[in-house]
View 1: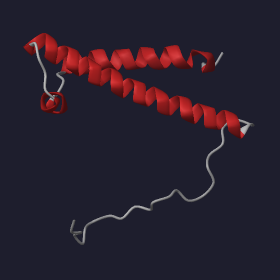
View 2: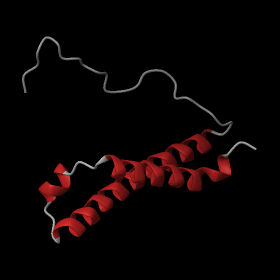
View 3: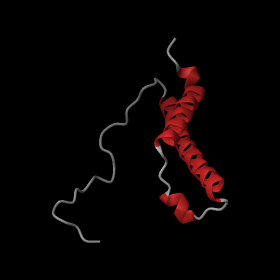
View 4: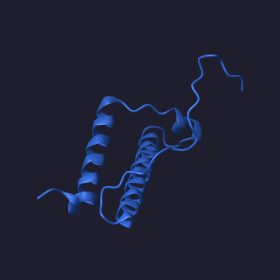
Length: 97
């Protein structure tokens, strides 16, 4: 891989202290874990949705079709609504009172 003079090099590791939001650092670690797991779950949900839509449309699906799929505006809106509801369900215990 060749680098152009416009290539931006990013540091490989974050510098400085990790942000802490709770008194106990273990709670911060668990929240980080939870949020990362939620992001992965949402991404998997979108991929399954893509596969289901392609199967409904064509009856079969290839990996290339899955990778190339571009959802329309209504599909994006449905996915966004699902994601918002998912976030609300999982984080409902952390809602301000």
